[in-house]
Every structure is written in structure tokens, then in C-alpha cells.
Length: 349
Ligand code: NAI
Image (cartoon, rainbow, N blue to C red; front, top):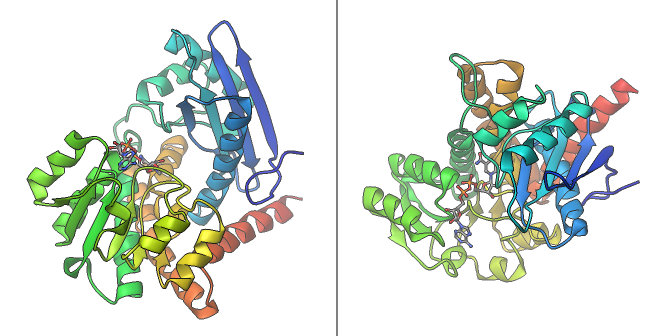
């Protein structure tokens, strides 16, 4: 039996090795209690097979929680592929991956993640229909999920700001870490809502574009988590909230798009102790998978919008319950997701 981060067993995993195309990695299906395991395909450099497996299991479990909480008819899964060190034929590699997805017979549905793009999904689609994140077709959801992810984070932040700070975004300063696809859309929404922005990105060109439009302040990447701001929005990397970061933070609310923001589960309690409200990452950033799932089910953009707009009220319920119980919102969200998954599993048994 293989165990993921919270100790929950992984339902199924498949190691992928195809020396001819360079395909090497793992598909991890954490749970199919609520439906096929859905989660993107990450294509990244890893030092060894162990690192691939750790990332795949952790991410697959996170997808189970995210999909359950968003009310999607999907379980959680993830594919993690090792980028070959030498030259390789990208199409051949993703075709081989597509065959591996096909062999799972619909128990895994793939899409983009870090390092993969729409074109890769089109190549995978030559081998299997269990893929989303393809070129959008008229009337059907699809295409870049980032605007939907940003909208969900924005809605979560509006609710979080009222709950934790008793204020509207027009009265607040938001420090955004990472101004890429999601961060960029989020900054535009925040600026439209009248929020003041402080930005940091390791790539100055992405950041400066936004500064020119919105007159935002820029700080060094090392300072963004401890800058004078009301809200911290991590939209770059996972694991950013560690003990040192929390200790130095001046913001009173954390709400962003990055996956797996807590470096360790213990950080959630530290945030409670410091009086910092944390909006659980997978509750806020579900807009992208909502879009992917609608595409797979043949639904349209209006269905996506309706589901994404439920993120704010859901975050409100999580924050209220956490306050009543005096625990971290992360704990409440985990419990809600676990209950949804286990009742579905019981019904199926
Ligand atoms: P992206 O790659 O377009 O943007 C990330 C940005 O962060 C880039 O501009 C990069 O230069 C910057 N960055 C990297 N390291 C940094 C650092 N140390 N400090 C400051 N900036 C740094 O990625 P995207 O799509 O915007 O995703 C952002 C985060 O949200 C990722 O963690 C991703 O896993 C997560 N996410 C994205 C979804 C989507 O729909 N794109 C859906 C759910 C989660």
C-alpha cells in the first residue's frame, strides 16, 4: 500500500517507463469515490524516481480534496512526468503518455499542469479521449483555465477580507507574489475593485507590464511576504508558508492561487496563533479544475461561471466554522473534503 501526505492510501498508481520516447513518471490515482480521478499532468525536472512519486502522491491527494470541495463529480489524481535530460521528441513522449492514460480506461482524466500546454493535450487526445484542457470549441468550456482560477481566488478574497478584516478590497493593500497567468488576471480584478497592489516576480517583464497599467508598487521577491500589506496572495510556488515566513508576515489574510502553500501542516496552527486568517489554497484555486471538468463533461462557460461563483460563499462557510471552533480553516476544509469522499465511498461499497 502506498500512502499520501495525510496518510491516506493511494487507490492506484502506475509507473511509466518508455525508453524509446523518453517517457518516465507516474500516474497516481488517490480516490475515485466521487468519480474518475481528475488532475493535470506535470512535466518537470526531478532528481530521482522517489521525488517523482512523492510529488505525484501529494498532488493526487490534493486534487481529491479540491474536486470534492468544489462539488465536482471527480476524484483526485495526478500525473508527474520527468523531463528527459537530453534531447527528446515531445510529441512522441506525450503520445506514449496518452496510451498510458487510455490503458486506465477512464479512471484517470488528464489536463495541463506546470510544464504542459494545450498542444500537448491535443497530442494526448490522438490516443485517448480522457483528456481536457484542449483548444476551446464553440459553446463548450475549455482553453486557458487561469482567468477562472483568478476569478475564484478573487471571490474568495472578497469574502475573506470581509470576514477577517471587516473591509472591502477598495480599502486594502494586497501583496501579490507571482504575476504570471493567474497572478496577472488577479491583479487586474483587484485593481478594478480599487485595491492597492504591491507586486513581486522573479521575471521583471511580467511584473512591469502590470505596474505600467495599475501603478502598483514593486518590491524584491525576498520581501513580498513581509511587506506592509493587508492581504498576502501567493500566486507563484507551493510551500511558501513556512515558520520564518509566517513569523515575519504583516498581512492579516492569506488568499492566493498557488497549490500546497503550507510548507508543513503545523504552519496552519502557527497562523491561527498569530491571528492570520488563511484561506485554504484548494478552496480558493478550484476555478481551473472547474473549467477542465466542464470541458470533459461537455458543459459551457455559464456552467463554469456558476460553479466558480460558489467559491466565495463556500470559503465564507469554512472561515465561519473555523472561527466558531477556534481551529484553522485548513483543518475545517480538510475535514469537509474527507467527509465528502468517505460518504461517497461508503455509498459505493
Ligand atoms: P505561471 O507560471 O504563469 O506564473 C507564476 C509566476 O510566478 C511567474 O511569473 C514566475 O516568474 C513567478 N515566480 C516564480 N517564482 C517566484 C518567486 N520565488 N517569487 C515571485 N515570483 C515567482 O503560473 P500560473 O498558472 O499563474 O500558476 C500560479 C500558481 O497557481 C502555481 O502554483 C499553480 O500551480 C497554481 N494554480 C494555477 C492554476 C491555473 O489555472 N493556472 C490552477 C490552480 C493552481
